Amino acid sequence: MSLAHKKIILGVTGGIAAYKAAELCRLLVKAGADVRVVMTAAAQQFVTPLTFQALSGQPVPTSLWDSASGDGMAHIHLSRDADLLLIAPASADFLAKLAQGRADDLLSTLCLARACRLAVAPAMNREMWAALPTRRNLERLAADDVDVLGPAAGEQACGETGLGRMLEPGELMAALPALLGVGVLAGKRVLVTAGPTFEAIDPVRGLTNLSSGKMGYAVAQAAAEAGAEVCLVSGPTCLATPAGVRRIDVVSAAEMRTAVRAELPSAVFIAVAAVADYRVDAAARQKIKKSAAGMTLHLVATPDILAEVAALPDAPFCVGFAAETEQLATYAEAKRIRKNLPLLVGNLAQDTLGQDSAELILFDSQGQHRLLRADKLTQARHLIRRIAHLLND
Image (cartoon, rainbow, N blue to C red):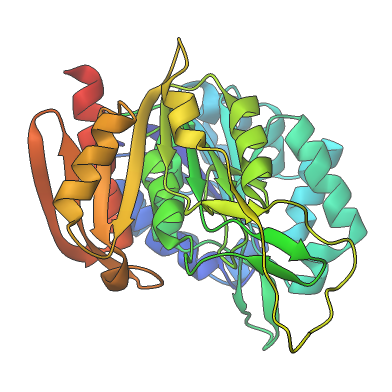
């Protein structure tokens, strides 16, 4: 990720998550960004301006009435050459100010007078996050083209657990390339599928598999880090949407096919999802009662989404995944050739499904490229770099 010479204004509002903003500031500076920090009065109750001055190497304005700003127009000048204004943490109160267009302190006035992109990283109690006024404010901000990063779910400072935690500094850093248009896939649309599908037998039973979705979500995150506009079509999982990624939830293979086709065209299509190969010919409308005589299901093939997309006249750069239990190299390369894919990722299912790490082999026209075991996000980043290389080859 390259943030060198990018000018970023980091707005800090009041909340316990303000301590994370200090680490975020450090990471931004380490990445080569030119960082200016602006704090609200409430933020200064948690972290001092001196902390951010030391980390950014820049003075920290805190008031509209600061005589040191020369002509008193800091709220105008600060954003004129900025690439991004990032509010982290963004409290519920500050989100309300933004939605209403209020300008009663330096940071809110700066947001209203800005000439750059605006992103917010919400941080608040789970009940505040779920409250109807907050939901309305977020809808207004989305309509105003404000990027909302997070929040995450987890334990909160109040002792409760749920949505509302500010994304970790590393997660926010991962989301910035897509906002700033930097990275090896900057400006490209990437479509990713992830997770299992569920094919109903009756209202309470179905056919599925052991896919956790972790690899697909890691690929979506890595693509966003690389600056791509990412859409993730996901089967049923319990995973949080990666920062900067737009997610569409589906259940069955047919629903996934419909969602994928609706999102085309894209520059790259990465089919990570473990789509069920078969579905019941006619799912029962009512629960099937257990019988000592047993039960026979008539199964029919589900659509081959990847093959369909790869066969389109204006097909994107298609990447497939092959999870095998034996003869990985033989089966994976045969699948790549059969589906006419420029790149296919192979792995042994028993070593990967549900785990946080993986050992992968990349198959393309230049041969095999082994990725030694590492966490799935690291592997996803290797994959994205390979895709970018092949796209530009």
